[in-house]
Image (cartoon, rainbow, N blue to C red; front, side):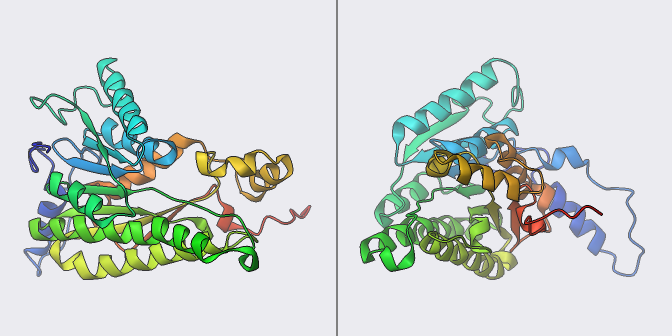
Length: 310
C-alpha cells in the first residue's frame, strides 16, 4: 500500500482555488491578476498515479511522463517483470538528476515508483489493486489487444478476448478507482481508446468496436462523476510504433501507407504520448472532461489520398 499524501503538493488545489475565487464575486468583472502559474499546474508532486499497462509501450511512456512530473507512480501490469523494469527506469531517471529529479513526489517515502500485478480481465484482481491504492488521484488505463481479421473470419472467443481486455477491463478499472475518487472529491482518469474508434480499417472491426465503447464509457463517467470532482478523458492514439503494431511494421507497404496517411508523414514515437497524458492527468486540464484527445499525427485532419499541385 502506498502512503504518499494526497494533498502535499503546494499546487494540489491551485486550479480549483482559482476557479472558486473567480466565481465568488459574480457581479465583478473577471481579471487575470491572480492566475496560477501555468507550469505549476502540470506538477503532480504528492500525488499517486496508477498506470495500468505500464510494463511496455505507450503505458510505460505514460508512466515515465507522470513520474517526470513528480507523481508517485504505481506501474501495474499483468507482466510483473515489465512493470519492475519501468520502476527501474523511473528510479534511474531520478537518480541521474534529470527529468523528475527533486520534484518531491515521494520525498521521505522511499521508492519513487512501485510495481504491481493486475489482471484486468479478473474483477478480483482489479479490486485488489484499488484496495491497495485507494488514495490514487490519477488513473491511466492503457492495455489493449487486437485480432486483425475480417469480421466474417472471427470467432466468438476472439470477440470475447478483444472486448474483455479493451472494453470490460477499462470498465472494471474505471468503476473501482472512480468510486474511490468520487468519495474523496477529486481525481483524473485517462482512458486509452484509439483513432480506430472513429475510422476503421478492414480487419480491425473488433478492436474498433471495443475502442468506440471506451469513448462512450469515458463520456458517461465524466457526466456521472463530474459533480463530484472527478474528470474523465480519453486518449486516442494514432499510428505509434508499439508492441501492438509489430504486425504492421513487418509489412513494409502497410507500414509506409500508415506513415503517408498522417499529416506529419511519419509514425509516432513512444515519448510523444506522454505530454497529452500529463495534460489530462494534471490541473492544467482542470476544465476538460469527457473529451477525446486525438494524438495521431494529423491522420484525422485530412483524407491523405492526394495532395493537389495548387
